[in-house]
Amino acid sequence: MKTHINLFIAFFRSGILGFGGGPSAIPLVHKEVVTTFKWMNDDEFSDVLALGNTLPGPINTKMAGYIGYHVAGVLGMINAVLSSIVPSILMMIVLLTTLTTFKDQPWVVGMTRGVIPIVVVMMAVLTWDFFKKSNQGLGWKISVTLLLVSFLLIELVHIHPGIVIALLLAYALLKPNKQKNEEIERQKGTN
Image (spheres, rainbow, N blue to C red):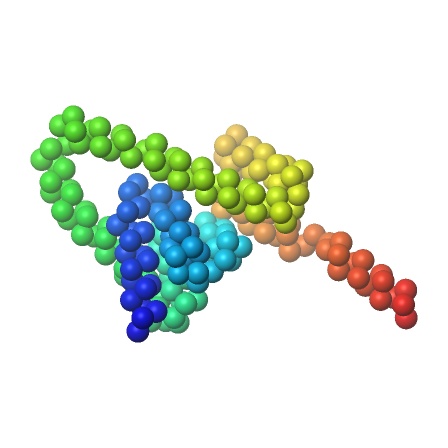
């Protein structure tokens, strides 16, 4: 029961504080899942994020469904998805009725513009953390190369990010593993 309460709290908090949609909620979900409740490590979370980006639909809901299932099975999945969308439903009902009345007021315009830099900083911090992790696993040269190639494909060639992620996952699965090949060679040499 405590796990379900914690799932609800984690995804309700990230849902209610993730102003601006899914990308702004990703760092909040990361904080809850990895730091606060320790249901996953950074590598597992980045795998879930990559998988979620390849599938259609809102990223926060997909991540909530997978993480909820990972933590507490089918009921955990239902709990996490509902707790991640309930804040949006409630906020839309309350805010849309209120904001439509005051949408032209300077304080409303300033409030919505003021949130954008905060979301940019949160995304930059998460991106830097993922880049540091990729450096540990791949090294600087490969990490920077993948970063630049991905940027060029997404921004200049206009390939969908899901396709770029799928290509990178295919490369990771199909590339030869040097350590494994060296181990096989050593075993052949000792036999």
